[in-house]
Length: 178
Image (cartoon, rainbow, N blue to C red; front, side):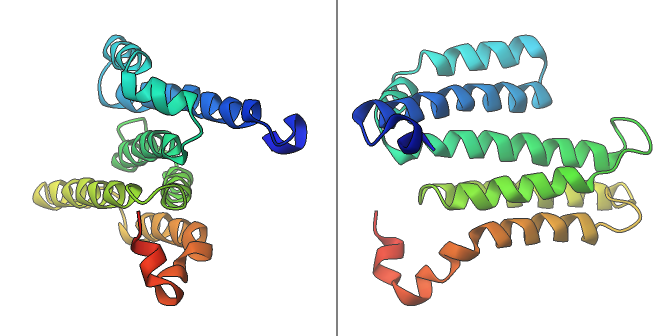
């Protein structure tokens, strides 16, 4: 992308990081708005925009700047998929596109930086809590069957991670290296 257009230069590296930093702000706003209201989402986005860590990662060509993009995107998509599955956004909406998009986001995130593995655990706990809440209320959130949307989520993430998936088997030390 950037190297083909801008050439292999310092500017191309920094432009890619800056665009990823802006994308992180957008995805944070979406996730925060899904959890709260627009005012609080805007406040969270403004605080992240002036965060020293975010500014540093956005200016330098560290691949860690990709983590908040995929992390917040995955959170937004999982939250939206759960709301659609619960019927809270109106009847007749299909949840499976949201689950697939969330799985793709998780899979892409796993290809970015090692710390993203913790996001997978956190999202798993969130989904399990959502399923448990539905079971306690006497209904599964993904009526009539909870398995198909969750399998779409899992399979789309697995497809994205497939190229990296053989690394632990062939180069365990490289896989666990920082």
